Length: 76
Image (cartoon, rainbow, N blue to C red; front, top):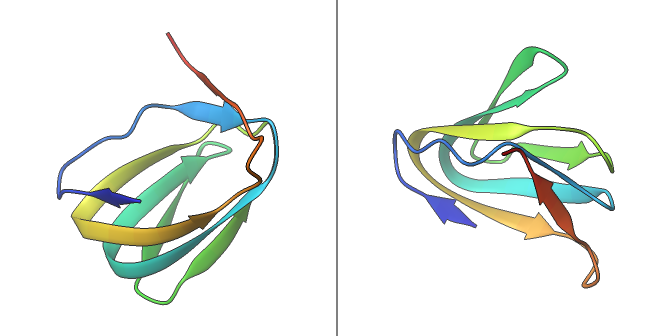
């Protein structure tokens, strides 16, 4: 996954857990009413059915590992 500085990705949840590994840049992963800053080399497991959102602080690239049959639900 990749996003540009200042980008706010849509709030969503997924049917299965996934893992994000930051390759470069910086983002804030928002969940459970907390902000979690992620930078190069950081990784996080995102549990299934957890509403979350990513705000990009610096141009961002990450590896997002998930099952092939995962599905997403977005807020309206």
